[in-house]
Length: 78
Image (cartoon, rainbow, N blue to C red; front, side, top):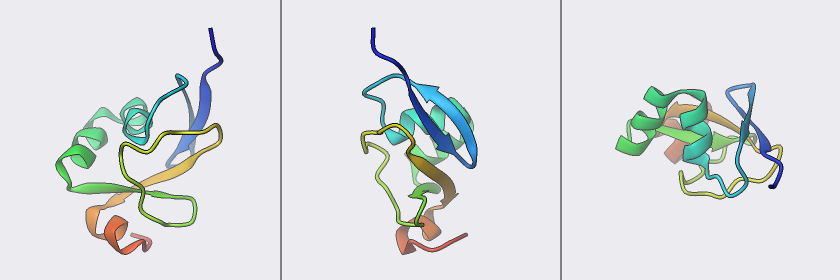
């Protein structure tokens, strides 16, 4: 059995299974926010503020923030 990945959502660490995607990590952090990301009212940016797709595969240490959909599209801070 492989070790879980440690990722960070809005500054808090979560352990997710190998092969998880951005939306899986968001769901681990906040199921309601994951629904908002799925429906397009919220988005996700990486540690640089660049928008990332919800189906992006995760690597250990991946840092992301949940932001408004507009901020995610523009790659700007909310």
